[in-house]
Length: 510
Ligand SMILES: NC(=O)C1=CN([C@@H]2O[C@H](COP(=O)(O)OP(=O)(O)OC[C@H]3O[C@@H](n4cnc5c(N)ncnc54)[C@H](O)[C@@H]3O)[C@@H](O)[C@H]2O)[C@@H](O)CC1
Ligand SMILES: Nc1ncnc2c1ncn2[C@@H]1O[C@H](COP(=O)(O)OP(=O)(O)O)[C@@H](O)[C@H]1O
Ligand SMILES: [K+]
Image 1 (cartoon, rainbow, N blue to C red):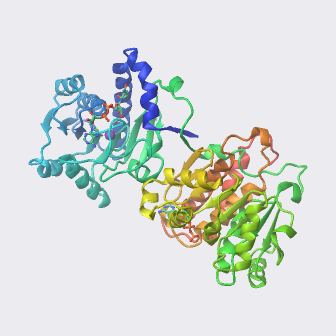
Image 2 (cartoon, rainbow, N blue to C red):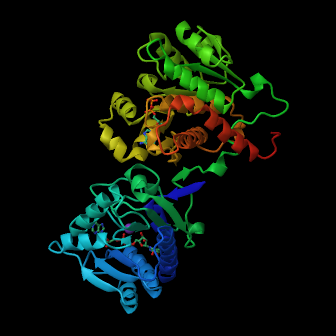
Image 3 (spheres, rainbow, N blue to C red):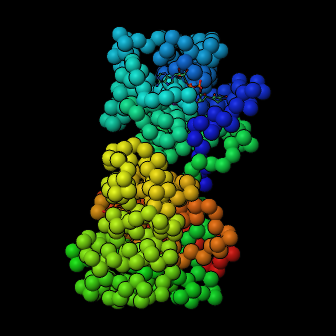
């Protein structure tokens, strides 16, 4: 599990160590980690450090200090180093060390920005030490010219290795917002703790691979602001039947999805739920859709009934409902049933406040915009995409439900504020039908969840939603294998990932 903290919380945690005069030690630990990660990044690109060229973009603060010390270490191993100082001031001791190792410096100005940007593009590696947790807002002035040149070279696959020091400069460490321009990285070497802003929104997209360097802040950090599940966290969260189980004790999932207009959504949600594993799946919906489901999935038990007529442990409602009044009514009934319920797609628009955390709304940014506007929040879709954490938390707090906001990074927020962000998915999953499979996976996790009430952590349903997003993202990435993916074909991938997690679940007979 990755535990993330806001930049503000990390600065607070550093304060007692700084007051004890240990700032220099922290910086050396950070700089060593940055140096080692940059060296490994160069090795991965088959660039030898000896004879390589490394440029540091150094701001006026400690972030620049870290990067200058790291570059001095690379210079000791034979790299030719240049520091582009984005401000007249730079960390004095780090700059002195950098110069003592033969590093060259130049001060960036409006008049030399274009020429400097061209020179920076020719380096083997760029260490981004412009702004760290002390930064506010996007990159401005001449450094923005360099950042834009590097960002567009990256899009063409021609950029140097860019290693962000603590966070990509221009990213807000608390939220992942980028107001204007940031410098996108291949690798972000972050210090003390992963910052929340590296896990969601544009900050996550700019960070590349994240390495966290322990600089001894652990005892001072407190409760994390956000989490990210990793593969090993799935053990214990996914459904594994015990020898004493029968189909009803494993958990029955009810699905009220699809309509005569959109039957495919019901097929995909149903298929994904069966692949995740349930004791029984009951389908409610139009007879024509039920017939299709039974052709594809004979194990599904289909009926035309109402939510109150069947005994299930959890519901999925909404995918492919379109404007089918019967399915939208079932979605409202599922929300009011008191049972855990995944509410997706068109049904998200029918949500009113006063829900409970076991109701999980699964909007994409467009659906969340409509939902928040219906609650009186003046928000546009781009604002949600710019700050998904903020709006997922807001929607959860306003509705009382758990909110799974889907996107490149998918964010799960509990109404009490707990937050997970998962980024396993591939952009190839951005295709119609993906969301339907995600709701089926999540429905199965809800129906088979047997965590005793007193063992549930705060934000339990956000945790399950994150587990579903993780499973969905990995299944999609495996199926895509770098190319297009058909959501209806994810079943075998989901099954094998569940089996992997089951093997690692302690105390269960496999
Ligand atoms: N405090 C510590 O003990 C440690 C700090 N570390 C590093 O220190 C960083 C924080 O250092 P600082 O507090 O010096 O802050 P920064 O290095 O992030 O820089 C802040 C400075 O940049 C200027 N600035 C802010 N926003 C700007 C903008 N948009 N455009 C241009 N200039 C802007 C401000 O005037 C401020 O002086 C961390 O991110 C981390 O890299 C590490 O060395 C580990 C230890
Ligand atoms: N750019 C992207 N990169 C990775 N995953 C994405 C991207 N865009 C969408 N996804 C994922 O694809 C799924 C799309 O869901 P949704 O928009 O509800 O699709 P639909 O309703 O058409 O099935 C979500 O799980 C989302 O996280
Ligand atoms: K930085």
